[in-house]
Image (tube, rainbow, N blue to C red; front, side, top):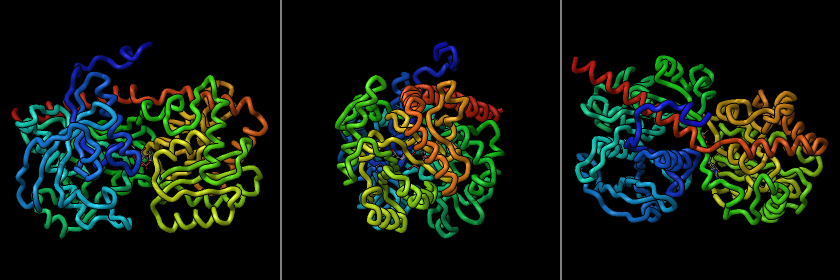
Length: 508
Ligand code: ADP
Ligand code: GLC
């Protein structure tokens, strides 16, 4: 069966899709949203659709975009300084991108959301309202662009007001909203709502109001034609009070308008056979060469060079979600286990950064930590480790476990969200069927994690053939964007049909 049998022709050849995001690799990235926002539109273009990206004009983005040129001045009431729309191409691929250049809002040190000390920018509501206002303009087809999207695809709370602003526009595009992480909602007080001078009608439980606060994400959930999140399991989880962050009721109400579509990964960037970050390339035929990368990783991280050591790794934002405290809690067992090493890279919560640095200082032969953000190192960690730890308490999708699979690094993950949808546990049945790719544990606590690590260590040491079959099954798994991008095309078609029905109902 080929893909065309599985995905019926939905009559959606050559769709125009505007993807709106607050980050996109390599222009600006703090996490997986950045990867997805660049690779999904590219995958859509590969399928013959005209997908384009819109992003705030951060200084770094302006520097990196190719063929950058001003498109038009946008005169907007109540905005400080000039707002200009620029167009160009991503530096590493032919993906058109629009940048919203508003220096008073987006030209500053720090990251898209926080200042250098990690504090949220106080004017984030103004910054992302402005972004949403420009998204809404572009979505309606600015004359000087000579291009008009049939679908506006918004991502996460920073873009949530765009569907709210467009809701009553005749002739608006179909609106799709993706939740990458429900824990980040863009919540602000009533004074902020008043200060933003949004239509008063939006202050309602059927609008932006959420327990007497204003919620950006609700704009996306309430006013879009279709809503999704980034894995089927997380889509089920967020419809329960445990994972729903107070929005589970609303998500349940969306019924068939809400579902999970699994992310893919970008094989152009994450490919161990052709990755400039690796001293040694390898593929499924030459997995033994992976060991060279382990030695390079140990050298880089100042750990004893030992090809037989069992090296565990982790890369990620240091936040409660990721369960890094569980990794810290199992350190005593890990260190006692003998030739085990741990390589950690991340930045975020200052207390977790310190705890990790202290652990590295206490166990220099076993633990090494890099506090900071570094893409090249992240690639080498994926290639050089034996196993990758993701004890996330919840994980909408997670990309690192998929990068690990692709790099023949066995993921050890909590049985939740996208982790559960992408890693096949090494049960006897899955091992016998040759489908097992990693280790899943059910209880997000130190015992649960340690049990899984021990299982992995034992298999690596005592059953090398089984271990090798795990590695190869992971490397062979199809994690590409191709299938997921087709799901999005179907999803866009449903959004367009829903939008049409609404328009008919309004004129009837
Ligand atoms: P999330 O989006 O919740 O942060 P994902 O697993 O989806 O989690 O994506 C994280 C992305 O960010 C991956 O590409 C990962 O490599 C990258 N990343 C996170 N922290 C760092 C870091 N300190 N250095 C390099 N890359 C990082
Ligand atoms: C979010 C989630 C992560 C997901 C990423 C991309 O940041 O935390 O699980 O992979 O978005 O969708």
